[in-house]
Image (cartoon, rainbow, N blue to C red; front, side, top):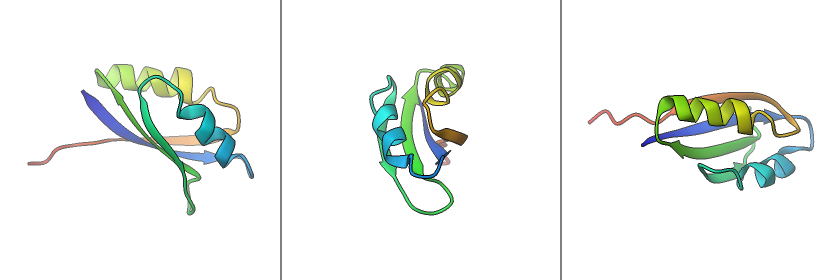
Amino acid sequence: MVQAYILIQTEVGKAAAVAEAIVDLKGVTSAEDVTGPYDVIVRAEAQSVDELGQMVVAQVQAVSGITRTLTCPVVHLS
């Protein structure tokens, strides 16, 4: 199982709508509006890195109002 945080920048005023749309996507475990350089932070999981990448490109980036995403896979260093 691969887990990742997806940091999302949105159009002005679109963060709540983007988070609401993304939270229902398969593989998304949470989506929160935040302040700072990113507008929404998503926690997601998939069976492989390839599946995660496909989810981000085909589903997440297709949500209206998103201008940029940054995917940060979780690593276990111990």
